[in-house]
Length: 326
Image 1 (spheres, helix red, strand yellow):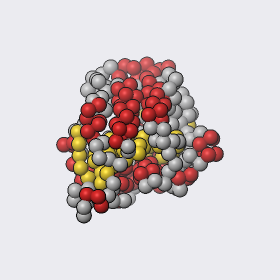
Image 2 (spheres, rainbow, N blue to C red; image 1 turned 45 degrees about the horizontal axis):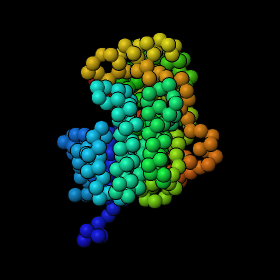
Image 3 (spheres, rainbow, N blue to C red; image 1 turned 90 degrees about the vertical axis):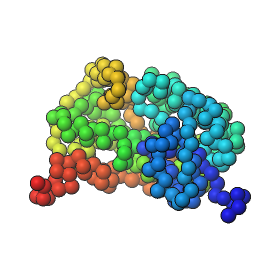
Image 4 (tube, one colour; image 1 turned 180 degrees about the vertical axis):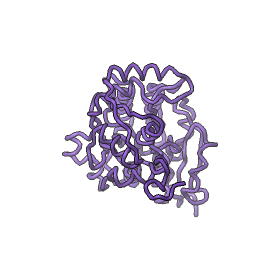
């Protein structure tokens, strides 16, 4: 095969993360060459079996350092940015990673003439009181000013085997007698399956998605925060009770937890601010077909997947309720 006949090259920033690894898998199945741009390539080797020999390569890149971003996109026809953080730690601030980083990737993609697909989040708003949502919104505005035909995806809460939502609360349920219902647990969410998100990205790389638009990706059902925890408890065969935690108290606890070094806080004050607003696909996006269904993807229900990866949180794992536990 000559160089001219090689499949197109896709650079995936954050390809070793939760969503990124599924994006890499979806692209590999389609035969693309994939360059995974991550801060620690030595920890991303688990991705290689997802493709054929030589199909997936790795490069060191940090969104805070523009030279590494430019190097990562050299020769790429497509650029996918999956990088995002849930809380700030050290130099990894929302502004540095999500806002500055998103702008850097867009400028690098424009420099090589690559098509850009960027993963944002429902709730992104440049004027939000949440740092997470505000930097996501500012990044979106910057990206479309730099690359007008960029495709931006806003997923709701993403669930799947490595998620940081159902897994986190399932872990809490294993050790804590009660679970917190932040704000009474009334916030509405629209959990979206990670494989559906990855498929949407792959369709964009395939050229099947109109550019210059923002798409909102949600699952087939809207659940309250409480209903999500109830679904988790059912899958893990546990009967923990709930305790309602007012937003103010949750914010205070989140602020304290964020000050403890070297641990991932169970909740932050910024995440509490996010939970004050529903995280669902807008009526405008639904009307205009800027959704998974509009992309020709049938959304996956939480109940059809949750058992498959929360089974190890059950009291006796897969043997819970079978009478085979030791």
